[in-house]
Length: 304
Ligand code: SF4
Ligand code: ZN
Image: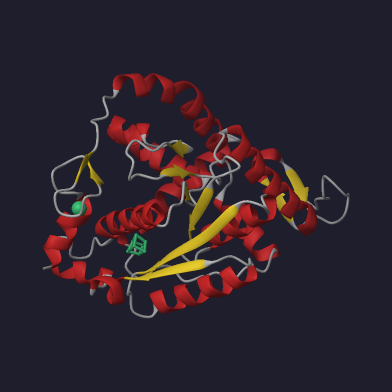
């Protein structure tokens, strides 16, 4: 069936399944940017004096996030941050795309090179208990460094490119395994609970993977198309997303309904049942931690 753009009546270039409407390229870009803007405003993610560090991986989602934030909030102080993980072939290409993107979006970019700064590559975890399951320590390293750099450079917010599909897939797993602590952390804004912990925001909270892909394509954004060669766990995530997409063909709007119920109904209830322990400072690095030695320092010890 041929779709017309719901806004201008021209030929549609993309169809939004959950709303059964189509958009031409230009109207879709506006639709996407309006969605990012309304999400930021709805959850009061950014205040006028904030300095926002956007974590960019080189993938379509974070490229779309940086570019859309730049367009929607042109006066906001935004910079980009990328970690070169030292993954053969892949990291060099990611860094290249991120550098192109920063230039295209006229944004300052800081690159943290694991090999140059810490003398390690994320691939070194292959020789530890993690063997082929590198995503777990990789996630710890990335979260730690993004926060540390943001804190040290005086940023007040860290923006990450978690999409609606990411959150729904994680929620699905969380509910499946009864991981209440994990579920409670899945929210659009994670406020700072320690002076050295920078608040996290997720402006793509209500945007799907597919919408990010079309936005990146229609805006001609540079992004890496190959998946990370170490992504064993992301294969699981991809399978979960496929399953959820299949469900969405039977229950229209399933992902949006699930996310809305979680955010509005379940989250406030679950939050009252979880006691978050106050953060202390890691004995080795002084950064916030729930234990004497933080998760990052523990992983670094493994490599020594
Ligand atoms: Fe790191 Fe896994 Fe992502 Fe590769 S797929 S960058 S190893 S988290
Ligand atoms: Zn530490």
